[in-house]
Structure formats: structure tokens, C-alpha cells
Image (cartoon, rainbow, N blue to C red; front, side):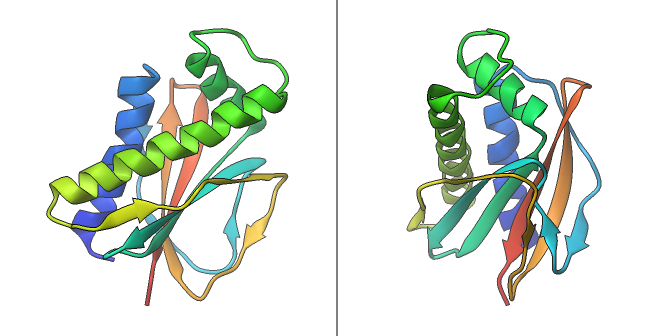
Length: 153
């Protein structure tokens, strides 16, 4: 995956967090990950299809998921994730995926789309033939999302 493609995906992710949810984002230093890729307590996985093929895994703590859902609900404090909360978090995955596709299209890539999001609850280790570029995103000086972007070989 080329640097401009990775940057488009990061810009799309950041855009949702800042512009849709009003969260302050501080991206960290990217690293190259090989197996396994750690999920965090909860992760949402979105595939990118079409002229660019990639996977986007956003891993985070349950507290971060609650903060995101709370922002989506207009600023409510969320202490426990119910079915409606999981649905909202899945929609967060759609928002990020769509924003990434928009940024990829804006940077000249055509025919890109996303797969429906998959939520993984519980810490996991993902294994793939692909390597991942991983970037930590500090959120509101309190939370963190680890964004993993696959780099197909």
C-alpha cells in the first residue's frame, strides 16, 4: 500500500472522530506490524474493496467504545454497551469506512467501497498473510484507538 493510500485512510478516520464526534485526535508514530496484530478489548473491522484492497482494524478499550457511543448519542454517559450501543458502534465502523473511501476517491482512486463492519468483542490476536501499518490515535487526552491498516503483498 502506498503512503498516499495510508494517509487517505488515516485522514478519513481522523475526520470522523473530529468532525462527526467532536473528539480531539492526536495521532502517534506509525509502526509496521507483523503477526499477530492485537485487537484491544473491542475492535471493529472494515474491508476496503475495489481498486484498492485492504483491511482496517480499529482496536480499543471498552471505555473508548463507550465514549464513542456516548458522543454518537449526543453526549450521553454510557457505562454499559447494550444491543443499541453495539449497533451504534457498528455504524461508527461504517462512518469510518465511508470517510476512508471518500478520501481515497479524492486522492484519485476510483471504484472503492467497504464491506459491512464486523465487531470483535474480547481481546484477540489477528493473523494474516499481510503486514499492517499501525498508528495509535490519542483521543480527548484520555482514550486510544489503535488503527491497523493492512498492506497487501
